[in-house]
Picture 1 (tube, rainbow, N blue to C red):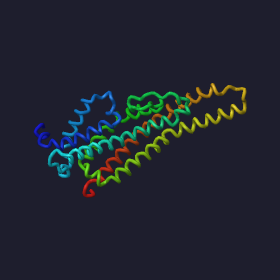
Picture 2 (picture 1 turned 180 degrees about the vertical axis):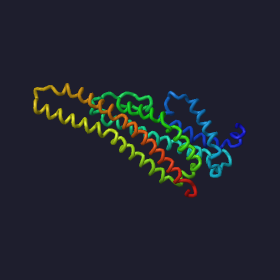
Picture 3 (picture 1 turned 135 degrees about the horizontal axis):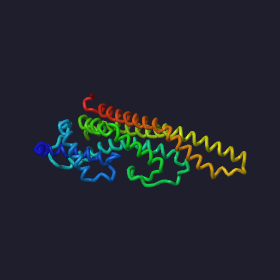
Picture 4 (picture 1 turned 135 degrees about the vertical axis):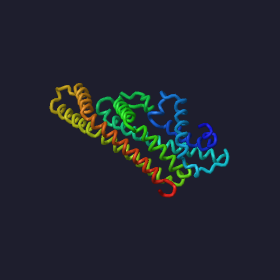
Length: 263
């Protein structure tokens, strides 16, 4: 094992740099609760497993010079792009909770989310936790490394990234589009219902000004929102799982499209 790593140490370093960048940008693994030593060990182990399938013939490494340093940065950039795409998937679920948090009356409830490492409203944090549980419960973690990392090692490297940069730009832009579209689909039933409740409360307050509907409106809105979340949660979980599968399929399709030789 060690003899193989030492014999191909420059290539091993490049593969490990990509894997470490992926780990440091993936939402579940990049949290401070996972120690830095565990991340380095996982990156080294995954690099050892992926080294036999790497595109070694496309890495023309003569010695450790500036070209090798730029190549190392490029490999890390590929890992960052892959991790960023996974982050966009989680951001869709977190954004869905943010869309109707203010209508629920939780507008001032932003707290620090240790998992997302951002200021997040309560419902956005709740949806983010649900997405993480689905990510860990299904085979998404295996798909990320087997279908994402290993597939990228087999097909592309930093030189391919320079030659096919328009594919990556289009890929990230489509990921941003899917982010807002999925967030809107998740939050639309709750947002629509809360809008109707607010509209009904406004009409009643105009029809009967002596009724103090402002104080009763917030509890009714919160209760109806939680009731809808309980009813819709099974369908949301299925949608979360389908979103992960669709996203990883797009990721594998991208890696298959940019294979050198047009395979």
